[in-house]
Length: 72
Image 1 (cartoon, rainbow, N blue to C red):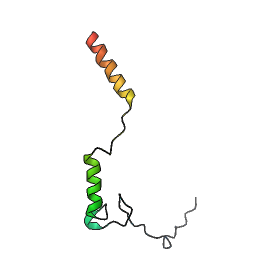
Image 2: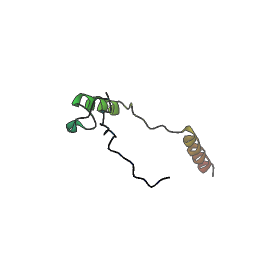
Image 3: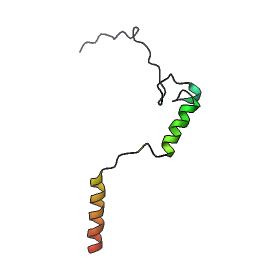
């Protein structure tokens, strides 16, 4: 690696885009471009469209532990 400074003057600043439609964000509705996109996102949360994946192996291990505890 060299110790020469990197020239960032030619780099273009990246504009943040709406998380729903990709249009430029508006500070009033950040991280969205409008109240419509914010409402769409809220609806997705309320309808449970966004989920965290859960491994089935974890559930099997818990059931086995509970079963062995009941047998003792």
